Figure 1 (tube, rainbow, N blue to C red):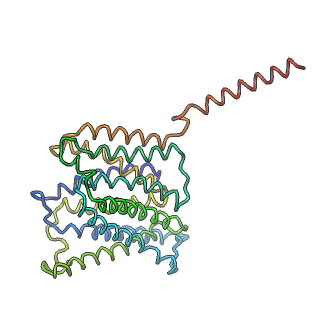
Figure 2 (figure 1 turned 135 degrees about the vertical axis):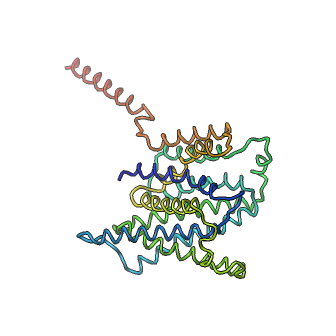
Length: 336
């Protein structure tokens, strides 16, 4: 399967994620425990990966699977990073409002590019760096509200702790993605075996979070396993399937493409979400949103298009060198 097909499917699923989550709410609130959704999504990914691994084992020759503890022990690390990241998110929201937090979240686009270069030793051209910065600018522009609104002034009025936590959150998010790509590409193990390891620890950590919430609330609503499906509707199950399928596609891109492709796939969900929101909700697009989408599309073209489509300079240099060669040959002929 070509990476751009997987990336397009990831864009489609990501664009519908927020819409499905909104549709799963009743009178503006969740009737179910939202913390159970990531846990069930991890279980779904684990079951799918286990089934695909079992199917692959039936083939001859069997797939490569590294079972050495030195390799397996690396797979809990992404879950630990995401666990720390979730706590930093809450700390950030204690100092900044939701709009500022959403805008600061776009820093992860740039930090992903930096860590992509530092840790994975992948070189990016100057045009690609410019494209990544443009993507961050475009997504930020689309989220900035009109300056007549109170939130416009709040962007630069938060305490310094809020900005520090926001930068840390962006770095942790990028680090988790970069480390996951490192795990996926460090050996020739089959993708499904790597997924089984990754999602097993993911399910364990999500289960631990549910248990911790029970202890914090002193089991006021009972243990988490007794209310796991309370309030679930058909739309809620679609949210679980969407989140699980998105994770499976991301792992495929980490194995066979890279983090930058994933970043573009999720960022390009913005224009599609906008179109869907126009039909499903009382949504009015702003000028900032339209300009942000245009900038993001320019960034997409700049990053993935061949250099010859962006700059005509090499062709001109070729023609100049050919004409100089002809002059040189003519002069040699005349002198002889």
